[in-house]
Structure formats: structure tokens, C-alpha cells
Length: 581
Image (cartoon, rainbow, N blue to C red):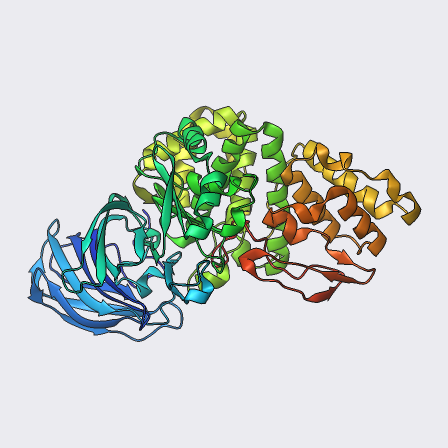
């Protein structure tokens, strides 16, 4: 018996469930608000149903109707981070199985946490304003009154009125456009999302956008300053999609577009259906960072199609997505590449555990999130601790092909639904019914409900990592008079990912002398790289006691002089857990 409540939502999904949203947005750049209506089609699950509660956050609600009749409503007490419950009393009683359309007329706040309003100066083009949303994890309630829980999956339709010189796109299929009959200076864009999805995946972008076709079901969208670069960078998208389909089953969302946001976009990426958001720091010019897209593509199955029921089970989304992402890398690159990326993930996990503290319950794979602000809670733990568990099970069950069979079957069984860890575990034991004895030996409590690092440390193939370590040691140990032994040949056999790791390792060492820094630039020509991950780490040391970290992420230069190390908290294009991604 699974819980019918979510500690991060005021709404209860034991009494009613949202089946469809019909959204009407008027985007007002002058006042930084959405003037909006939403019609929720709600299915009743109990008899004598007379009221429902929706999640809101800083919304100005002016009117509520139920099947066209006026409905009474009240806004409850404001919670410090969960927002305000909207209590709606219906003008009639309903029985189990009946449906009601509840329409709410409202306006968002200029400070709505889901909406980012950019001035023209914050865009690449510098001429027009820009709007983008970020609803994960519980910010949709500041944009739409809703049952803001991933347990709820619904379709949606939307009409968006914007100034006619701008373009609107959403996490849905485009369904045409027309002049706004109320205002000749505006245009209305229409969208439909026929696949049920949680509301945290509702996304909207409005700006001076252009697009280019990059495949039979894919386009890139961005300001004109980035669009051609993006089309080149992400030209392997269809190959990644086909690789993912071979592993996980058919892609059900129809379109897979990528939106490259302005330079001030502060995240790495976001897996909004039909419209992945991506940072412009992925535009390396050599497709070397496009593997971030493999993660977002993987979410089309793990997260968007099979979803964690509540945020305590977030690892179901992210652990499986990292696993599938690395399986795509295995297919397109090599098994050694997958192992190399997994080793990097273990280091990220260790860093998160060190940051939180090894005894912090938020480092549990399945944490208790009662009265926890999600924006303060999440880290790489659900990503990498989740992956580590799946990799451990892969080794126990018979290898990547065998375990990928389970993952594919798991996706097929739970598609279009939201599930808990217990449901996942029950199916694991059902699928591997001939290996229950091995599964019973797994310390599930240590993996799931114990803080700190996992109880088992995987033994990854270190071939690719060893080359990075060896080169780092050479630079650290070499005397000034022997610098002539370095040449461009040192890095010729290293992949871009290995070069990034080499520079990361140098950041952890004592600062190199200036003579070494000059020689490294001379032979490796690091300044010539446009790859943001390399530029982020390049030549981290100036002199023997101070380090300069030049962070090119977000088009910002962080020139902080920091004793002995780098002060940036995340890599520019690494897909960080919200709120940083």
C-alpha cells in the first residue's frame, strides 16, 4: 500500500486526480507577469466529493468556477517554501468516477520562482526581453495552480499570447499560431502535449528565437547568435535517440527539440518533454560536450515516462537516467568510456557527501523530505548513489546486457505512471526470480536509508583515468630544467573528457610554478580550446601560492584570487541537480 500524500504538496491525490490542463497565458513583459487561466479536468476518486486543494505560490487568484458555476475559494496560510494552499469548495456534490472542470483565473507574481524574466541586456541579441521557466521540483505552483506533485500525470493544451516580434515554445508539440484577436501587436501560439506527464515538466520560453532542423524529429532553437552553432553541435541527436531506443524502447514523445538559452541561463540542462533546455556553454565547436544531451534524452524514458511518485524517490529518475546515459556512451564510444565516466561520478558523489556531511540524512538514497526545502536538499547523491546501486546490481545479476534487459522491462511495465522505491524493488525481485537468493544478500537498508557513501565501492576499469593521473603526476614532479620533456604528443591520445579530467586533477594539487604554466600553454595550446569545461579548468595556477579560476560559465568571469584552489562550485556544462542545473 503506497502513500497517497506527498510531503512537498498541499494537494492529496487520494481524493481526486488531475487528468488534463488547458492553459491560457498572456505574457506581459512590462509587468513581468503571466495573466492566465487554467482549466483542470479532475477525476473524482471518492463519493460525496465537495472540495479540493491546489498548490499555489504567490499567485493572485481572482475567480474560480466548477463546470461553469461560480465556486467559493480561500487561500490558506503561506508556508515558508511550499507556498499557499488554494481551497476550493464546489457548488455541488460528486461521486467516485465523475469528472469536473475547475477553472481558475489568476496572475503570477513578478517574483514567481518558476519564471525568469531577462532584460534585453541579459540575452545574446541585446534587443528583446526573454522569458524562461524552471518548474522542477515544486515551482510549477508559482506559475499554475495545480496538484504540484510528480504522482500526478496529465496531458495539457496551451495558448500563449506574446508580442509578435517574439516566438513562444513549450514542452509540447507545436499546434499552430494566429494573430491575437484582442491585440493586433501580439500573436498567439498553440501547443498540445498528448502524453501524460507531471506538472514539473511544463515549460515555456518566449524570446527572439530561430530554429534549424537537425534530424527527422529534431530542431534546435535559440537566438540567431547561437542557432547555427547549436545545429552543428547537436547534429548527432538522431543517432543518440536511435541508440536510446535500441536500449530502452520506442521514443513516445514525437518531437525531440533542443533549446539553447541565453548566456545568463544558470543551469546545465533540463529534460522538458519535446524541448530539452541546454546551456550555451555546451557549444564547444567540436561536439565534445554533446554527451550532456544523452542524459536529457535518457530522461525521455526514466523520469518523464516512468516518474518518481514523490521527491523522496528522486533517485528512480536520476539514478536510472545516469545508468541509461552511460549505456548510450558505451554503445557510441566504448565500455572503457562508460567506466571512466562512472569513476568521475563516484568522485562527484564523494564531494556531495563531504559537503553535506557523512551522517546527514539528506545523503540517504531515499531521504525523508518532511518539512525540507527541496532547493536546499538535492545534490549528486540521487544521481550517483543511484547509479552505483544499479551498477552493483548489474555486476550481481550478470553484466550490462542482462541488467539492461531488466531496465527496459521496468520502463515498459511502469510507463505513464509514477512509482515508489518499494514498487521498483518488488519488480526487481520479480524479474530476477531465479536470483532472489543473491538479491536477499544485498544490504538494502544500507543502500537506501543510511547516510554517507554506498556500502559497496565498485571496482571500475581505470585505464582511461590512469593516463590522466600519470600526466598530472609528471607535471607535479618535473623540475623546471626538465620541462623540455613535455610536448603536444602528451595529449594527442587523450580524449576531450580525459583532458578535462587531467586539468581537474591539477586543481587538486599544490599550485604549479609559473614556468610550468607557461610551458603547458606553449605545448598544449589550452587557450585555443572553446570547450567550456577545459576553459573552466585551464591553467588554474598562477604563481606558487595563489590560484585563479576563470569561469566562463554563464559568460561570467570569476577572477577571485583564492589560496591554493578553485572557488567555483560547479562545472559550466555539467548537468547539476536542481537548483543549479
